[in-house]
Length: 345
Image (tube, rainbow, N blue to C red; front, top):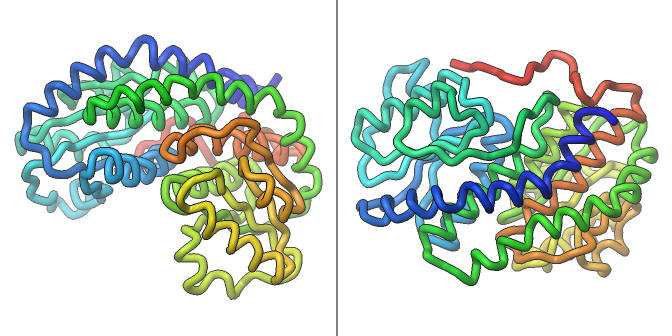
């Protein structure tokens, strides 16, 4: 078994371990943060971790009613003009904790007296040393270049922190069902793996989500680029309607990340419009009505709350990217031009 597939299948275990071992620490972090005058979040991340930060924008905005901004690390390292901060929680997301620009954001935040938290899989990294609090992903070593289990661990870490800040026991209970939900998706993985053969010669595609699952669209597009070298372009469905839809013609592949929730009716309407344009639809959903419109339905066998659905919705995308890489004769464990740890300034 390739490392990548092995790491994809480890995710239920990783998620359960994170809940069991890390929530006590997260509970302490939340108690400390509630004692401070926090009005907003500033989040720093790159690549996959930046997609997790997109999820955080919707999560902390809806559950905690906190505005979220994504940091521009080049302001710190290239331009030397870090923004002045006040009443901010500054959060870094980095599986390796090695990128100097992310570390620079946190070191400056600490110097300005802001509370700082890092979500990382590397407890001995420079990033971990730069912050007050660490949330460990507990994912074990991730040897494949493409992040899978660390991404879902980052999402779950964010969800645990949000729930702890809100002191919401009901949400915590629903969150605890995620490992079992991911296991159910992996149990039907062969159905997903078989769908990829149809796209052996795909060169370009659009990947669409909205709200919480805009993060899923971005992460799925990244996985397709990394693993299969397909020009996958992610969009919010709203942004897609403001121009990019003009590029869609007969046979053009469009992925829709559309689990149930408040954005579902809009995505169903978009799918119907795309069918009229004769697009090739690949749909990740738990709703039969939408799956029936797809040439390639990627069925989610279980439903979770919308605020948790990015953890489950990305799993079929990970499997699809892995399978398509094999079909194209590529090595999913060693994508060209990439390294496991990328250090940017």
